[in-house]
Length: 593
Image (cartoon, rainbow, N blue to C red; front, side, top):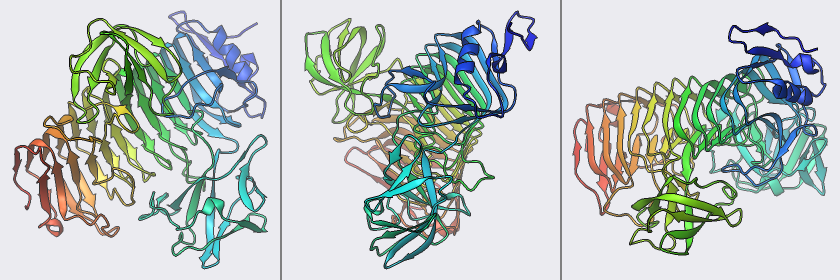
């Protein structure tokens, strides 16, 4: 008979997974036991993991057809811990370590409400990435030391393959990390560390664990540095949350994820407190996430990120955005067909009846007006038919983008640390209120990127109210990545600039910039931009490489105010550039021109 740890005064129960057969400290598969414990729970109950290490395997997991934002379409997905159509559940780890085997999704919350997940460490038995230490580089090639126990590999037809019991993967992505800083080696990034195609280079095993790549390159990685190697796909997130409300993740360390870290879509109200996606600082592993850490797509309500830490990532720590679809056909005066344009967005939901949808001219990316959805019919995974309650805008054109304005969140990011990861730090594309405060940014690319497009990734969301205050930006932008024009880069992809800017009301206040490069701010297509009370201090950590004279750049911006900033004497003489055919008023003081 089931025993309970405690019966709470509310009548809710604390249910131990060990009562259903989970065995901490053993290699036994805990998947079925955890599933049974969740199935036994009633609203208000707590699923409790006595502290220990639990293992989860792919074969006994749940299978679901799921379409994940910004992820490869690989169905079915394999899920280890599934919370589906449940209300008011807590999952408490008490410091337990969950170890996963093969390509699985550790946690999925689907169609659920008031769910809290707290107190875990999540890792893999065999990580779905690999790393090696550079032992030599010369005109004959590259010598790399790889631990074959941690990162098993094989060589077939002279080509390197990383392996596990059920898969073989060819490497395709390489990034050079410095083991002292535990971050991306300055000056490398997406510009690469080598001229040749290392993934296709002939490989010889000099001895077990020591590989030689025969290649010719004028440049190469530093001896002693570590190469992080991706050989996977974006198939399973670390935690996936969809069609849910009031979900909290807290006090949890993701030491590795096989795709995106925490992915939430069509979810209302999400709180992430002390959720760290970073390698164990006591291990020699320098990587954690295969891709973004927190990817928050088409959500609404309030998203709060508080006290989190990001390091060892192969993409951005936080990306908040919507998803545009492109109209392909006008069916009637109220109905259009539209298509998900990016391969990693097909199959997703676009809208529900009652949602407000904006029509966007994809040239200047200005809205033509909005309408309320009456119905949505799925034609294929990529194509939908959307009927509106009232007639289409009079200036509607086939090819216009549709943006769901209902599923856009307010965002607060505070007290968090953005380490020297690949790419940028925080990406923002939402029209609701955004507050970024009291964080530390050490990103190897731009610290904050305010994006928005309806032509490439189709990640929508013109911002209307953003405050960036009391943050520290320390030696950011040390390597080259897309859209990293300055420490803060506001760079929507507007193909045909119009008279009306895309973004508006961005305030950058009372921040501290410690930087080796004077390019502090690059802004395109903003109405109402304030840069005030900031302190800029020169450092000598790295050489300046962007090569621009301007510290502040404003292109096609209107109503710009720059005042009250403190500028390091080493940066005096750096200019402010105001340009573009649609530039408007700019009041600039306290900065050399």
